[in-house]
Amino acid sequence: DDAHALGVQDLVFVCLKEPALRASAAGLAALVGPDTIVVTMQNGVPWWFAGGLAALQGRALTSIDPDGVVERSLPSARCIGCVVYLASSIDADGVVVAGPAGRLVVGDPGARDSERVRRVASILEACGFAVEVDDDIRRATWIKLLGNVTMNPLGALTGATVGQLLDDAATLRATRTMMGEAIAIASALGIDVGITIDQRIDAFARLRDTKTSMLQDLEAGRVLEIDAIVAAVAELGVLARVPTPAIEAVLGMIRLRAKSARRESVPGTDA
Image (tube, rainbow, N blue to C red):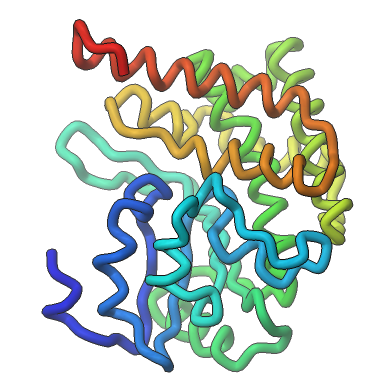
């Protein structure tokens, strides 16, 4: 409840979803000292992503950290990226139910062959996780994002599982179009995702019966991760001068759906 009571830590895992992180970041600053390693484990685009990309010339992403409080509290220089492939859900009693076995991909946004990444990987492996070290964590982040930016909002908009989205011709076509736009953004930013749209879609095979995290949040009345998963991608498209009409259209629709859900949960409001 109070990070100040804990003080500076050697290692901090940030597992909050983006809306909660933005609200909590200032209070987490007390955990971070000059030698602290911060492992970021969020879906979507993390706040450190834009830093170090020559194509962006040092521009920050206002969609995910508009006032810079996350960066000030959890400096990018302290961060290790972690891409999470662990599908899970929360049952009616609030217990986390693990889905199919997955893996964690870790990497240093600021360095290749990073000693601190190897330290983090060894700790996670000792805890029983399957861990991969990737020297290009932005690429690894974007590969996961190809699924997040498509399946998450489309699932929340339709109420469909991953398999249902892929079995429907219209939503499959929308998925392919959005993935194509996201790959074009990565290319403009100097990131070679090294994977085709078909390969990324094939990777969904083991998750066919899964409801996306955004759909789970919508059904539970929680705030949706729209900014990190969709808005940040659209913003990067603007900065990279890559047209993203499909992503922007879905962004508009999921924002309206989230507003409708808030009105439904509090009748008579106009949130």
